[in-house]
Length: 202
Image (cartoon, rainbow, N blue to C red; front, side, top):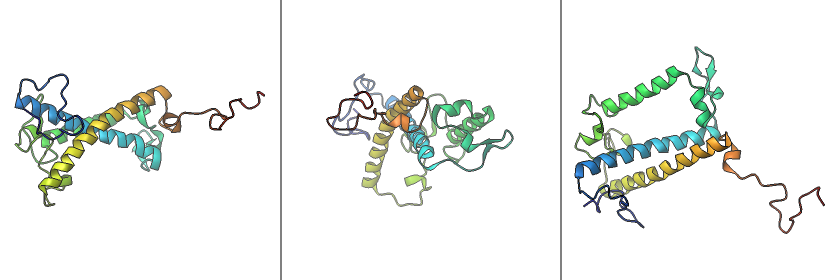
């Protein structure tokens, strides 16, 4: 029933190994699609949060002036959980709630348990009415390009969900988000050809 929906891509086509859509319930499908898109977007941001501070640095200045906490004092990855003050986490949760409740600042939305603004505005899962690239409908839509971009977003979101789980596990295992997390540390003789005798042992 959903073989022609967005997100149905080669090589697997419509892939539902657990038969969540076997009942053909359109409402349930749209809810799951909205959840998938939202989780994919959050995961893409999360991956950026792991990679960018490690590669180009952090914001200058203070994260919490009242406690003297600078952005540079907050470690990347899981280490940030214990460094950011409770008030900081509360601000993040409140901001996310504001976005949910207003559909990205467009006024009070019809939301509730298992229901967000994109599921009640008639525009489709993940569509908050902001237009292409979130430009508040200032850019002219191109239907074919829009379909391709939406498929790309779903695919990238799926990849990002796997990627952020890998990053979290690697970070938890190695205790760092630095090079040690990304590259296997070979012994000093491990990158030579034909030399299998460790140095200083022969």
